[in-house]
Image (cartoon, rainbow, N blue to C red; front, side, top):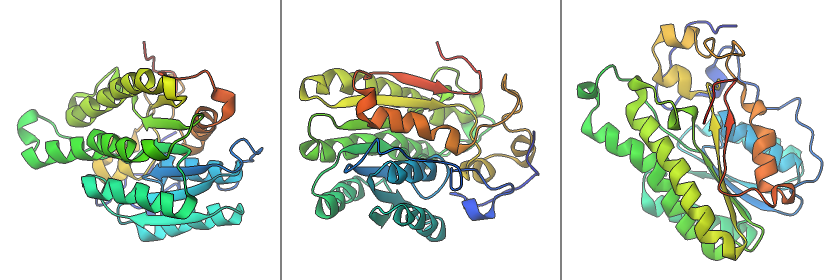
Length: 279
């Protein structure tokens, strides 16, 4: 399976992708696993973040949808959350800014009076053929968006998280098998896995679980926005399963890690890679 060649400007818009990613809009069925919980999800307008937001809402959670500037995508996600009978809170802005991370949590507390689930999913990547091609500011921005934001969000959220709460980081297969053309991104994804492992040990005595998910090639707006057209066309076809994953195929794992059914899972990095091993 391959995608038609296509390119977008960063950060990418899901409504302009061909084919449209499957975020579970029509297929995901909830079973009350997150009833009464409040979730904060960064990068929740599209892709994996949208799939998680839809799943969480259908499992009974209210959702704060943090996103950069993709208003239409974010409004579409909010509509799915509200159609599930849950509260949707839209918060645009750049998580690369520490104060914005703190503002996200403050708004969640204002709206929900608590944070039960924090999903650190927003990410930036760019393909570069050589290290000399990576602008200094791009290196810094990648780290600020992908890993520093996780620090600021977690630090702000912890005072509002009770025993049984869950923190989830979106790592990547690149944390274990880094792509040379995604060097800054891959380094941040390894840092997410490592930081997650530290937090799991640090927060265990408080009853807060911390895990990371390591996706392989998943069809999201980041792909046509940050990869050359030839790589977009063949994206994911080199996996053992022979295709890219769809965001909805990640959602059940994020639900498990957020729910009481995952009550003894902490400090894990779980692969969803279409067969590419993470060891």
